[in-house]
Image (cartoon, rainbow, N blue to C red; front, side):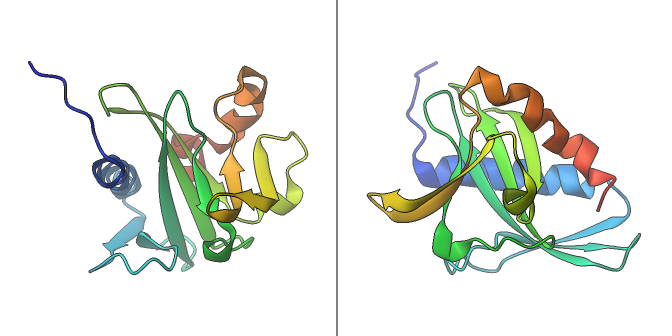
Length: 151
């Protein structure tokens, strides 16, 4: 089989479908997809029938060489804004997945959730520090399957 490079759009689509499937596996969650990607920082909307709360979910894919990140102007540090960070392997298959409330960036002291106010080439951003082994234990608190029960 010929190995093909997956572009950013394809990786994002894979990650979004993976997260939607995880969320749909919980019968208490209703999942809605956007009709179009308007760049406002929300890929999925979720309503919890357990709590009656609505959540906005921004899905980001990462891999072995890049941390999932979000432009600061598309990020909200609130409990109803969720960042879904999906780690893709070299073939583009989803692996470890994290579901992190935006408010965690205000509360986390482990260093696994980062913020760069000076920014990179695309400006200021927040990131999920998945590449450094030292952050792996702290990130387990945000494992997607564990976090589902909290929604």
